[in-house]
Length: 191
View (cartoon, rainbow, N blue to C red):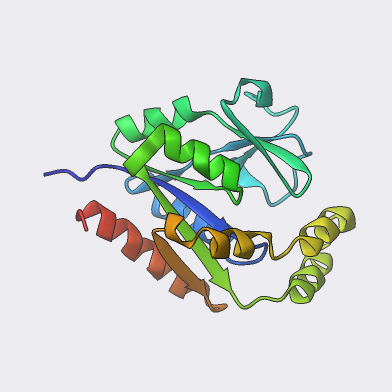
């Protein structure tokens, strides 16, 4: 019997490994899962990939998103019709979203199909800031994220029962890949 595809919402602090999970999902191809693109009010950054739809990109339409939220001073939006299309095609969907209101709205729309995952790492805010600055990231963007670094951890701590799984990023990308693959496999096997 085929498994029911899920919407997997990934929550984590900056530098926690969320981008690595996005890369893992993209690397494994669309047979297991697809990344849900988010519309955003900010300009495109070089590391955005297909996860972000920014002003000026084809198909941009933050005003046409049915879930809109703010994180780190930037607006983000999700079109749930796109998520439903992916789920109906039999492919789980992965969405990075670290906002309590957005998670609540996703739960209202997707019910038991929503799986909420917290990604934790031991990266400290100052380490995150130093690394991002070395990569040449916009200092204003990095400063805002570093100043609100504990936001996702606080969300997790205040709402622990909302989360279905916790993944640990200990600095080894392959270990995080393995954890997300095991998570997909467990849901595909109906566990």
